[in-house]
Image (tube, rainbow, N blue to C red):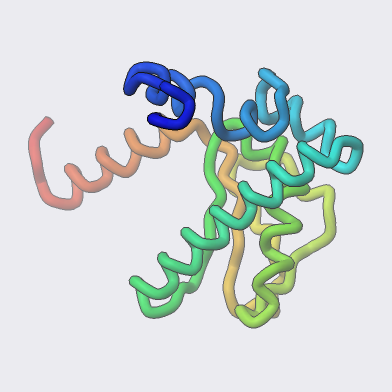
Length: 149
């Protein structure tokens, strides 16, 4: 702030609107459109490398906190666009004994296994909208605990 004479408001604006993929690439476009530039623009490749590293960090933290895992689920209504990123990401975890099926993955169901039967850890793509998933999980919890709603 002192070196460039930025106010706290300018820093806030930069963090909210000029960092992340936009700050790294210069492109102000949706992530699914940014994916189309992978392999064609070094700045986009760097941004996705950083993105993947952050996801890997969070998966590693989750494994550590949980003491292991049985399943990994990638969730969201736009998750299909990220299949190549997910494929690359899972390949970074060979020590987990994950055996993925090849791309393209089955698109006929909301929830699709993307690992083979012999995979120790199962990985799924859940295409359902996150709000719908939260609603159904909440409804199941309330029903299980006999809460009237």
